[in-house]
Image 1 (cartoon, rainbow, N blue to C red):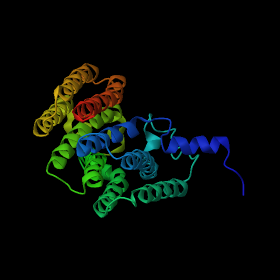
Image 2 (image 1 turned 90 degrees about the horizontal axis):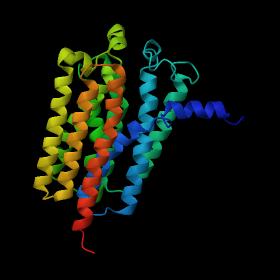
Image 3 (image 1 turned 30 degrees about the vertical axis):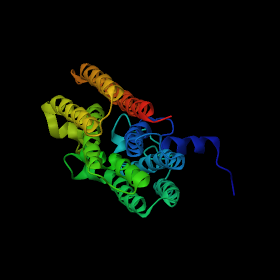
Image 4 (image 1 turned 135 degrees about the horizontal axis):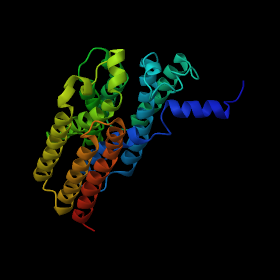
Length: 292
């Protein structure tokens, strides 16, 4: 039995995007918001470990199944034509096997948690596995992705508290809007190729209203997060982080207003700082409120 060569290892790493952590970070930030808000302070260490590692595993599995679903499409898109599966470096069966193994490992991680978290993890797995196929028939696949990328929030509350209070669904809605905003920026990069291929994206559906749609989603996202802060009686640091996020979103508008692919892609990447700033506000606010 031969060992995996260095070149093969690199191909597998590229398949699951270990070289491009932005997707993992965008999935992780709302999960961390949920964990800290559910704990109202420093969360349980084991739960934190499980969710961080589980986020990495599920995003990696999602990338593998996404490339399997798009293996014939990626060949015709300039940005994706050299992905390992599209380029023939990795077979379709290998990609599916990688997705299954990573998903199984993620499921094993949540076994020590309560029954509600386990049930939600099955829903999360279904969403992650089916999202890549929605681009064939759904005019706004970014909304479906938003739900998939938001499921760490109810899972975090379930794991930390055993319950799903109403605030969970406000947070989930806020994150869905944020995902639609940043993934539309991402979709604007490939719009010309996507139109030729005939797949559906929010950038194509919104057409000339794409920038308005993005900024409205960002605005409602931040508005809901401000309302969440009011409901949970967050302090100054939380609202300061929201102010920083508003500034970052305004900067994104400057990047996308001319619809240049390079600027749109930079705006997409820039959302990492939006997520990080909100997490910093939530965590620091909880820290100063936690009794010593």
